[in-house]
Length: 172
Image (cartoon, rainbow, N blue to C red; front, side, top):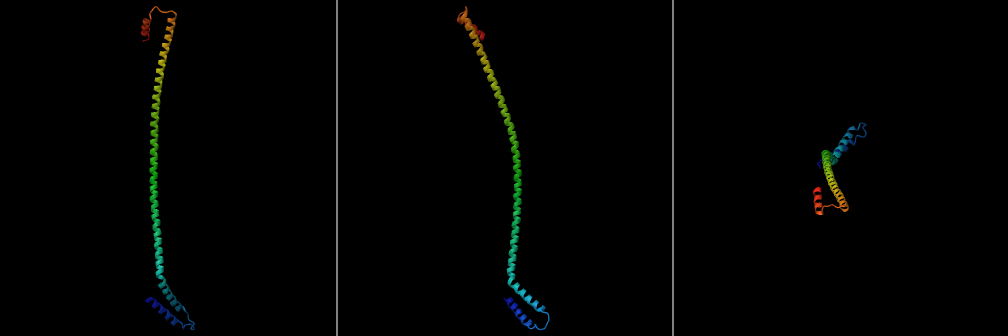
């Protein structure tokens, strides 16, 4: 409050000192300068704290915004590095999967080929066995038919038991 009293006293004394200067024809630079200094002192006194608070708050908010922006940039760089690392990991995993798939395909192809070969051998053996049985049956049928015709037409002088023994020896 003492500053207000001092400023008021200066203002009142400046009015009293310079009020009688109107008729001398001199310059009024000195009274104007004093009035300006008084005005500046009063404006500083009344507005200084508010201006300081405003500008310090503004500086703090700018500093915080700058710090937040730097933090976001750092976070973005970290996220970018993590994404690059994941991309490299995924690419490596993909190449491993491709290589594994190729080897699995080769193994499966070999297994299928082996199974097909085994199946071919089994079918051939089965066909050979069946052909052998068909040949034997055809021979037996032919022999039975021939013997049946011979026996029916001419007959042998051999009884049936002896005839069966002879045929059994020949067939065996």
